[in-house]
Each structure stands twice: as structure tokens, then as C-alpha cells.
Image (cartoon, rainbow, N blue to C red; front, side):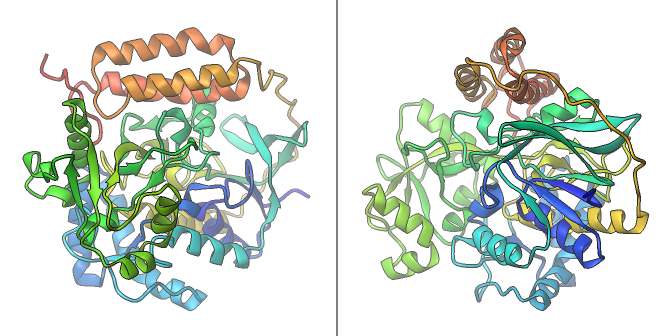
Length: 475
């Protein structure tokens, strides 16, 4: 079978684009690295931002632009916000219902964030959409190449059950997510390693704003797993306090909005306070236990498993890598610039909506809006590739020391390409990456190529902007 569209990934952006393609009679093959639910969408605790009505659209646009330090692509932000008003009804008609009420999160002027299952919005939406999905599925398969010639995508190369083979299609949508595994501390699903961005580098596909890496300020990192427990923005939005070991709400030293400042500001404030020798906690004692258990069931259960007696006991927190604002550059229809029948949606894509710092809960909204745009573009073009055969890339996929070098990379990225950066540290990271790449198998190399783009972009932007903070900008 030659499907109409191969979709790399299985998160919300992947499934939502598949929905519209399937509705139009197009066949889709979804390829996912592990199990279909092992994606960032599934773990998203925050909700979906949707403008309350037409009157709220200008304010939502303004909040998004402010959070992004006005580095956003304004036309894309306008598309995002205007379409969000209709999305509520579209999801309702499809059979999905959010919890009653609406919440406010950091850097939002008003309450406009919708949740499901308390702090399990991503999981509930993902589960609902998967049950309706009509795609063919190839799981536990690793895409290690995209078949491109003269700017036209013809399919992908995969490793599945120990065998390499090519799969051809009329269109390819990259929906592989962000770059969490590049950092020592991250909130991402374990499969999110940034290899598709590295593949883009190899294929001459433009990446944009790769220095714009967002760190979530409130993460419980005292876990044995590499994926750390995110403590949703909604906690602070609904009244939780960030305190130090003395019980002092020190965030107001850095921004008058305190806990409701943008994520970049809160992350830096916590990081700097920790650098001064302080411990930092999230105080949730203002919540009634029954309310907390119902509103934040995932957090309640997992923290109790770690003997944190919430909501009575403060939660030790630290920032951790959370979200990539940059990515594969696409146009307003999610088409990869300079290429035919190749699209990118979700966190892997740079649409320009997030600018230098994503507004809380705008990410799932972006998945909905721009995944649909990709599908509509494919449906309207009805593009069909000619029959063509590609030789399978013979490069060794894995080498014995790959895991060792990947862990060293995570340390380097956290230390030198993290919340606070300077030229010396960035150059150290770049040298390490350049020296290590020749020693790696193909899949680890793709990860390192992505990291290199982040470092290069961070070196090139010598002044601080949004999530990119250079402590040596005035040196």
C-alpha cells in the first residue's frame, strides 16, 4: 500500500491532521517510535487556550505577543486566536467535552484555558481522538531518513523489528515533537529526542529560532525516571505560591506579577535564587485536600507516591526543559518552506506563533489549528508523487558508546545551553558536539545535529530575548 500521507508521530497534531485527511477519503499511515500514547500530548497537564469570544481575540493576541517578547509572527498569531473561537464548537460537535469552568494561567490577562480530567487534559483529548482515528499504525518503528529528491518528499526509511525498509507516500507530515532528551532535566515523553530536526539539517530544511527553548519553572525533579513530573501552570494560576526555605515569596523581587509572570521570568528567578544557595518549593497549602485531589489528580497521586504529603507539605521544585519554540520553518499552511508535499505540525514546527516564549496552554491550540491547515492543504492539492525507488541509507544506526555520549550531551546542554547562557559555555558545548559527532551512530548523530543548531543559534543571538538569556550580553 502506498498511503496518501505518512505522518511521523502520534501526538495531537498527528491525530488531528489524520482526522481531516481520513474524513476526505485519504489514507494515512502513522509511524511512532514506541507506543502510540508515548508522546508529549499524552502528558500535557495544562489545558487548551481558546479565546472566550470574538471580543477576547485581540486580548489573546496581545497576551501571546507579549509572552513571546513580540518576536512572534503576528499573522500566524492572528490565525491561531481567531480559529480558537470556532474550535470549541468543533470539538463539541465531534463529541469532546471539557470540564466545567475555565481557568487563568501565567501571562494570560483573563481566564480562557479549558481543561479535562483536572490536570490530565492532554491524556483525555489524546485518548478520545485515538478512539476515533482511522489511520494505519506502525508502532515501535524508528524513522531514520526522509526520502527527498529535488525538493520533493517521496516517503521515509524506517527501522522496524530489526529490519530497514522504505515506505513511499504522496505526502509526508512531520509531527515528531520537540527536543526534551537533549537536556538533563526535562518534562517530555521519553521518545522526544529531536532527531527529526537533525534530519532536517541534513536535508537542507530550514530551522528557525532554535535558541528559543522554554524551561518550565515548576517541576518535581526528584524522580528516578529521566522524564520529570511537571507541576502545571494552573497551580500558580489558581493560587499556589513559589517560596524558599524561609517561606518567602521571592518572585516579586524579579517581577511585580510574581507567580503569574511569564515562564521565562519565573524560571530564571528560581534558577538564580537556587544559585544563591536557596531551596525552592511550591506551596499548595491554600488548597483543600479534596479539591486538590479532584482538580490535580495526576500530581496528587504521583507526589503522594514519593511521600510528599500534598497539599499540606511544600513541594521541592526546579525548572526543567519543557518546550521548543523554534523548529522546522513552515508557511501559514504548515508546508515546509522550499519543499513539495512535505509538512511539519506541532512542536517540531516553527509557525511563529510562540515567538521567544510560549504563552501557557497555547501549544495544544497550535496543534489543532495548524494540523488542520496541513490536512486542508493536502486535500486541496491532491498531490500524487511518481513512482520512484531510493536506496536505503547504509549508515550504521547505533554504536556501542552512543548512550554514554548522549548522557554527556544532556549534561552539556543543561550546564551551558540552559536557562542562563554565555559565550564561553556555548563555545564549550559546540566544541564537544563537533568532536563527538564522528564517533556516533546515525540516530545519535541526528540528535547531536539538532543540539548543534540550538548552540549556534544561541551564539548568534548575542542579546537576551524571551527564553534566550545571555548573561554576557553587555560584556
